[in-house]
Length: 169
Image 1: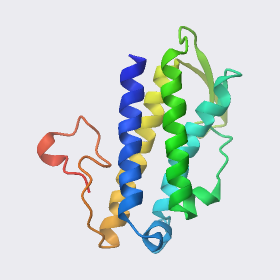
Image 2: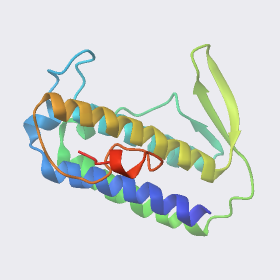
Image 3: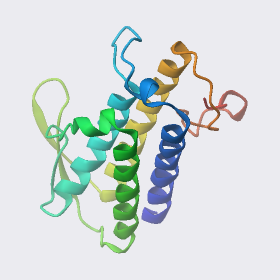
Image 4: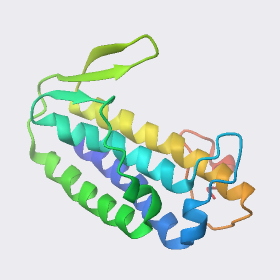
């Protein structure tokens, strides 16, 4: 199961690399699209922050999703983001041989203060992948508003979306 999840995460992250290779720096940092006025780069950075929390907390079995690094270089520099994704993918592949027959403790703020929830490594990685996918869909909206047309099949779509509707950007 873990290999399947890591492969799915890496496939999704590879689509992010394709995106980074397909847009300009100007599009990556553009904050003109309402209602939130966030950039594509900020959504990429935010998605990577989630994965960073998993990696940073795994050794101590204390993954804290409220302690994101918010490395602004990742939101402003496409090359830095790509390099970060490559390193992340390598780290994820290294987890394929890690014993995961224990629960990991995950802290998050669900709107009423921090709570700790037990996950497996597989479930937190699946959660991180879904979170990234959600932000990739937002990126699709931003690109549409910027009138940027690129083709990355399935980008920003959940795999359960019917095939005829899952065109990507």
